[in-house]
Each structure stands twice: as structure tokens, then as C-alpha cells.
Length: 152
Image 1 (cartoon, rainbow, N blue to C red):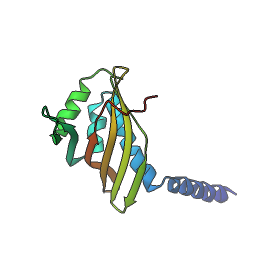
Image 2: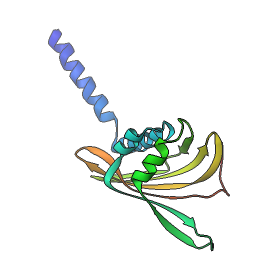
Image 3: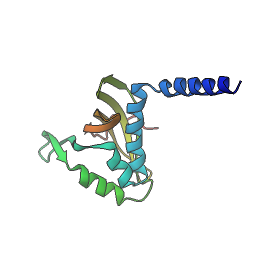
């Protein structure tokens, strides 16, 4: 009888472990990044990023021309970690998540709140790579706007 419970326990844990899909594990790391932002936790943020991560945003320059601005991930982490807890609150929705082996993409529309006040909205486009069994954000580009936003 004792062996029956041991086998049953192993089987149950195996089924539970397989219950999380690859898409779920991608969502987990992205959600962890936003938890790090909201909690101003530099260590948590850094743990989500690949060593060679690329961070970009699409915006307009003073002349109104569309540009892609490169941002330094270390600078982003440093900036966010100096905020008070709760200041940087980005609320996302997972629209699309796709996985092919060690590569994943996620498309996440968002609303960003700063110090409890709506600031802007847009879409994040993530590319993730699975290094040694762990997803890392390799590339993140976003749009930002104040018009056409659906706020809560």
C-alpha cells in the first residue's frame, strides 16, 4: 500500500508539472518582468532579460517623424529600481503567444499607469529565447500613444 501512494504521488506531480504549457511559461516570465517594474525590483527585472537584450521604442521626434529609439536595458533597470513601489504599473493583456522550440513571441497590448494615473497605452512585442530551460527576454519593442486607449 505504501508503494501505491508513492507511485500515485509521482504520477500526480508529473501530470501537474506537464500542465504548464510552453505558452504559460512565456507568460510567466513576461508577468515577472512587470512585477519587477511595479515592485521597483532591479534583481527581478534583470533576471528576466537575456545578456544581449535589445530594448527599443517606436515614437516620434520633434518634427513628427516616426523613429525607433534604442534604450539601454541597464539604464531602464536602474531607472525603474529608483522608483517607489507601485509607481510603474503596466497592465497588459496577452493577445498572441507563439512558441517554436527555443524561440517565442508575445504581443501584449497595455495601459501604463504612473503613480496611479493613466499615462499612455500601446503594444509590446516580445521575442524570447529559452536558454538552458529558462525563458529570457531577448528583444522588446513597444509603441506608445495617448489617443485611442481603452482604459479601465
